[in-house]
Amino acid sequence: MTRWIFVSDLQLRPDDAEHEERRRLLIERVATEKPDFVIDGGDHVAGQVNDEPEEVARVAQMWAAYHRATAPLTQLCPVIHSVGNHDQTGSNPTSEEYLRQVGRQGQRTYFAKTIGGVHIASIDTTNGRHRGGFVDRAQTRWLRRDLRASRRARCTIVVGHYPVLVAPWVLAHSVLRDEEPGTRGLLLPMLLEAGVDLLLCGHLHAYERARFETVTQVMTSASDIFSEDMEEKPGEYRVAFDKRQTYARFVLDGSTIRGEAVSADGEIVDAWTQQLLPKPG
Image (cartoon, rainbow, N blue to C red):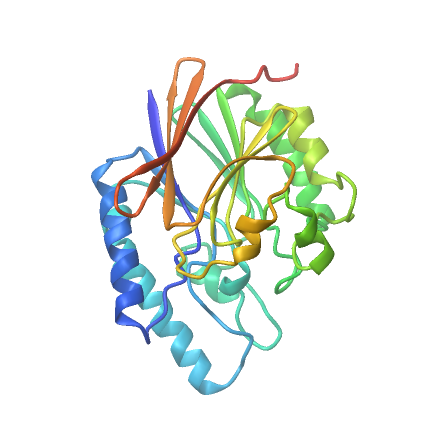
């Protein structure tokens, strides 16, 4: 049996003590679950596109706040990171500081590891600040190879900050989109072909579970910022939704995944089970 937690959009910043306290309490609740590992879906901090000295100092303070808040997790178990748009900082946004802060300095923003029979591929969906998509051909080739190799694991997860299954109003705003708007693009067919069990994401600051054919997408948010459009204009693939601060917890037991979304005050807002998908080949 393997247990893990997914959180996203902590967006730590140094100028709001209440903001940091709410995230600290959420992380402490997560730590009491004693998971085998934790996945952070991105936007660890609330960085801005700015090279001014004040912003450079502020980014350093944000990362210090992030490390303070998440210390109960990093002392407990492995934490797997995925880059978010607010983790890209500077006037010409890069992921250099993000990589340094998460212990991957000089490495790629995408990678994979297997823990307890669960294979996790952390991908970079940001494509530059606020653009989204999956256009890096080197990453595409890497992910195809990785997903083939991951068939030895019982469960396969892909995590990227931007969602793939999004409501039409999101596409119309051209903020979040697959790399080929209005199509399945490059990423979704790869997930379906490889028998990926879960796609984990954030960015839209709400909890949502969506389903497309055999792929379950789970979005969570530790953020306090909520777009009412998310509630008023659901996408066609939505199965469950909640606008509160949430995290998701999962248990892999035999051939079954049990998932629950939990609010910051401990209420279970969604629960489901699904059978592991057969891995091709």
